[in-house]
Length: 298
Image 1 (tube, helix red, strand yellow):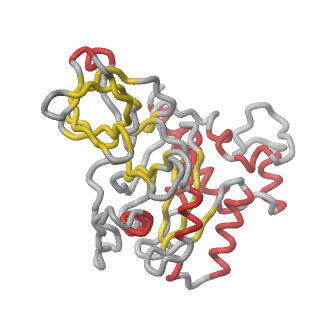
Image 2 (cartoon, one colour):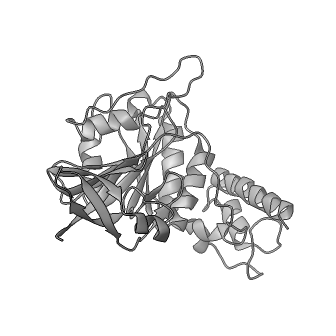
């Protein structure tokens, strides 16, 4: 039996679409024994399939996974493009900080992307926000799907590996996809004027090839409004995902949570202005949330 290598690019109701080369996608089901070995087949799985006489396929083997994002369910991701809108809907930096933590914990490189930059009405505020994240070590891009600003620069950043798009509904992910993948014709959702939030337009996770790239793929995912840190995430872990804390003066106590402890280098850096005060305050909100959860489940 000849096996073909491929990647699962979408899946629904027990059927999976496997891309075996640039021009061929095969509709597949999974062998029963695989269901015993794996609780689920994920979008992004590298697989081996056998072709059936009717042109469909059977997934025979799943290769080891490198990374797993549980929400949305996707594996083998290299980058996460965290998309925010400057307006409509208003950007949520606490949500951004959550997503940055989740991406880093999963071993995925995060990239911050402000869309709808054509609506920018406060350059000083934008500079303050981007400077805070850039000083923390996170790349920040400004684009506009409406007038094509920054799209080619974004395309270059996404040209290698698999990048998952993430962000709340209405930020313009589908519009960005239409710019990056003009032949895909992704459905564009209108933003509700009444609720000032987006309507869900992507209904399932899918991986699409980036035209003109050297093996670049984009994973489009359903939008979300709230994302929780993993249930097993501990308060002691949280500081590890704030790169700017590592550059602060040393703390007096090992394992300092940078909250109420005395002689804390991070708090000194915040007071000195080398760590952004507002991002630090959002860190304290996430820390309190985790600590409250830890008390509840003791």
